[in-house]
Length: 336
Image 1 (cartoon, rainbow, N blue to C red):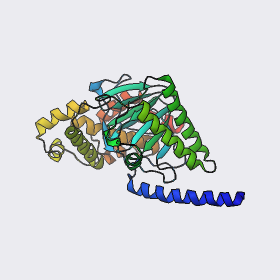
Image 2: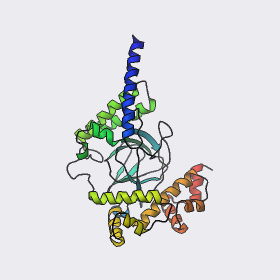
Image 3: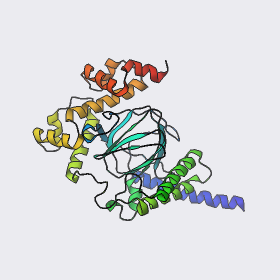
Image 4: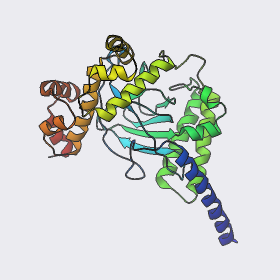
């Protein structure tokens, strides 16, 4: 009897997997953050926040659409990482993203709003919101990314919903949300027999909490940018991320979004809190910092590889961020 039930259960799981494979193929595909194991642990680098306290006019640079690659067995993307004190630069995705700080703290920028999270706090990032994060060294972050096709299918009227970026103000609802996130992480790490069913049930519970307790009132958590302005920024960010190693002119970017260069300068600085050139340099800076930590290539080689031509500016930016030289940071990271 037990063997028979096990066979029925496995047949049911296989049917679920087939449906999830279809969902995954319909969802977002790409390179994004690629997990190398069940729980992804890595050091991310990127543009940086100007100082400890985030200000609207000293926002981080950002760069790209993140293509979220789902895991067919669970329909979503789930991973944790330990931060080395570097940044995830501005990006966006169609998925709903939930961050849970399990150790340390994080500064986060969502559209024009900046706030700080501590251990145990969480953040909900709505679909297509432009966002960036900065963690203190050795912070540990749980990330859950729920793809748009899944949300569209299972959450009524999802396209017209927005969720609060953090606490709903009700301690019981906040605690229930944390509990779901913790259980999701534990089940995903341990993967007991049939874990997909338990994981999926918790995922539905989490979404129910979003809809029932974390819905934003009209206008709350929304960006002051118009849809047209957001679309233009996204176009420019994607272009810079794809071509940052090349020579990129302000004229190139302006023509890309059908604006004259003078107006484009004002438009970009108003919405990004920095000039276009500063933004391009920040994108290049983020890639160089990552390679300093992960490779043995010379600093000169890395600057040339990533299109950063001003060595003095790079050293100044690096020291402002890390308080040391690139060589000292490399030694510290490698333990040599």
